[in-house]
Length: 332
Image (cartoon, rainbow, N blue to C red; front, side, top):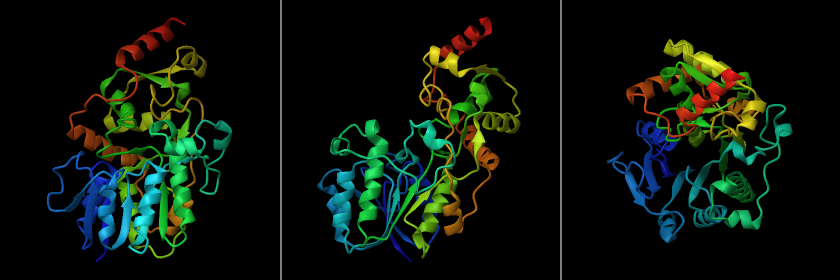
């Protein structure tokens, strides 16, 4: 039995991982603010606190075999935690992101990106910037450097892509499933040819769980869970599984640019004319995992969103704007 501390653990992948860990003989403790889904896991030990305050010192009062960090955003905070845990943590598993790579450099993504490819710098100003999302990739990259610089700490760093699946509160991946399920016409960017590798939540939780016990490992892993697929592949698979046949209205890159359609924000998953593919052969080699196929992961998503009654996504462009753009395309 191992004594495991999860920083987070009630939101998305952390929630799935906690569910899985409770089926083992491990001892699980959650540290979080108690604000997201506070009533779940009533029988799990919880330490309530804000990691950005002195509350974090509560975790330094005991020994941990493994610490799993889902919630770190600020490098200074991670540096403090690493100092507090010196001699008190056996392994530190850190959830980073593929956003540590230069996301606005199409040339960087000409071939599948590997773990040893360059990551973003982080200036002193970016490191302390309270606006987390404005410098998200830079901060996460700096957190990685903090962990790798502390040679005494047995750390494993995972870089997931866009995570999708059960408990996803962002709706970015779900946006397209919802369109196929609910609409007769769907605006599709640039023939849907841009490719991506994303991260299925169930598989990512499995990967993290395997990382608790694996003996020999590298420090850093890309943590995507399926082979490259295009947006069109995604839409076609969704049509097949949902038994739907909406008409896809193609919008060229030029049209989207002229009409100020935002990549990722207005059309989630789409990156504006570039692929986002990372190589995950290192994780497959080092961990005894068996990931779902992309189609099977979609089946899992469909079951989950069907159980919720297909709520309207919280992200992406409004339907009336999408309709206006499709009507404009029809007149050109």
